[in-house]
Image 1 (cartoon, rainbow, N blue to C red):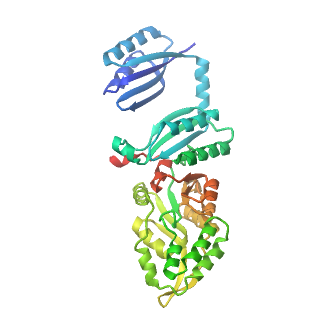
Image 2: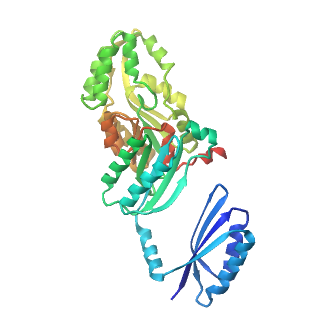
Length: 404
């Protein structure tokens, strides 16, 4: 029978601690089966799962480790592990791993309690909890900056859709964002991010601003809202709205384009995605006149949107070429993936309206951002409380990368 043991070491973190402990284990030819370390506010928690060589006895090893721990001013606890129990643990490594990402202005005990309870109620056990957001001052804690904690667990819930529904309900009740996704090879290997424009990259619906300038704001807003809720066919509704803009001066487009309000977190997200060598695209049911402005402003690579017909300096009330509706968005996303020579699993798509759902469903990671209820319910992931830069946490980005 092999002798297996866990060493749980805790105390004030200091340089050379891990080296000192493992040096003693090395002197006794101990094998390390598993090791994990966490430091929270200079307090260390180190776990080492070891196999004692058959020719050795554990007593001298434990005695040496205890003596070393005493000299270092730390605590150590020894727990024997049954070989059968160990083998069962090894066999569990083939199970799928899932990630729950919690995003909130400030992380609270209540949020952690609710999420961990849902995990437990689905007969799953948390392997690891880690903070992805940076350290914050007490003053910032009161102001409520973006904060993020990630939970990792093995195995799949008995009913994944039910668990997702529970997490979404919790997110709505607490005013936070919670994402559940499989931790597979694609999660850290995304290469392309495609965004809707209106009410996603920017805080407005451009067509509503054009309508106000044309004096038909109320009529167009009503059609826009019904289209975004999925009550009207997008292509038909777009043609009806654009027809109401007939005669609007091109100079008004320029005025609106100069004051497009970016969504919270858009500039930070674009900057970091570019640094990480992502390709970025706007695939919008809006208008390319404004998409080109954003493409240049944010340093994006591609823009696909509807083209307004302009003659003699005024809108004709018509759209030129194929209308970029929901199905067209999904098609363009697939074509972009082919162009980039990547799989759709490596693509992230972000949008807020019903016409974004076909595109979101094609992407490996589809995110409904501050979306209408029907979209939020149907999409794989939803972010409502966070800015656009919250997307970075869903691909495992850590804030301290920026501090280097």
